[in-house]
Amino acid sequence: MGSEYAISKALSHSGEQNSLELKYETLEPLLTMQHQTKEDFIRGENHALIAVTSASEASITLDLEEAAHSMIVRACHNHDLLGLPPTSKTRRFEDLFYEDVIGV
Image 1: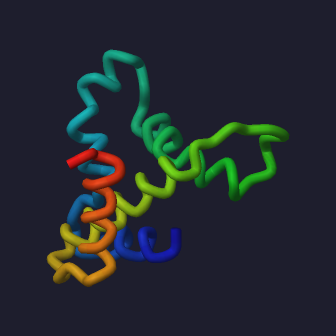
Image 2: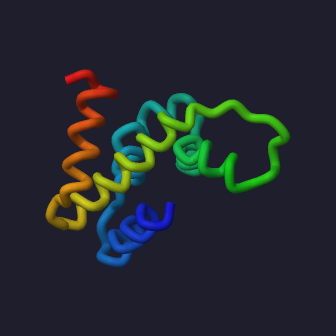
Image 3: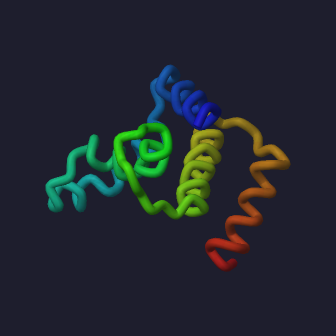
């Protein structure tokens, strides 16, 4: 979470929205109809991270691969939002993601 969090904070400090805020903004009408708050949405998006960093739940089932993909996609999106040039690692992840997850 370290670098995703740092990139997200850099966006906040520059007055820009981060990936999670933009996603919430897009889904807000639907979430409002479902009586979900922004905090509910963020907690849901960070469910796996919260589960593995807290000992509040005795047993939990997680799709760690999906959770990892989600966090990396958010970090890559935040990286793009900052206007940073793509790196060989971000390009490689995007290629693998589109191949293996999206199926393109």
